[in-house]
Length: 136
Image 1 (tube, rainbow, N blue to C red):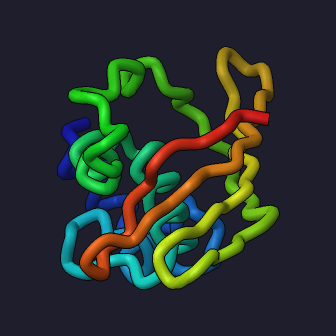
Image 2: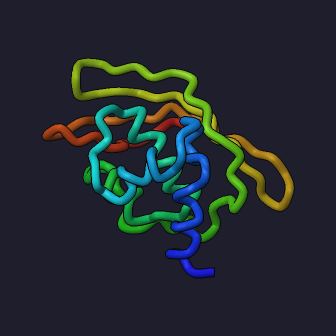
């Protein structure tokens, strides 16, 4: 199955970010760069969705230039079965800095795992970027 087929099927499904909206009405508009994320939380959710769909270009485009890698070397090694995203905390400091604590659950070879992270975001010229995070 090619990427375009997977993407078209995904449009009608629930968005992986956990918003309870259809993907076509949720993160798709950010991942396709039709719209900019208006908050750090929206960016966080769309980045999670991009990880679940292996959209490396979007992940790199939304990563702050000071900390952005040249490639996401693990993109092919990412879990194939993502189970969900839970936002534990979202704090915005001033108008241009925010942190988000989240838990992303996934399975590898049938075994459940979770990534618990506090991520830092910055807004420059009205555009939110992921900066870095601390894994808890």
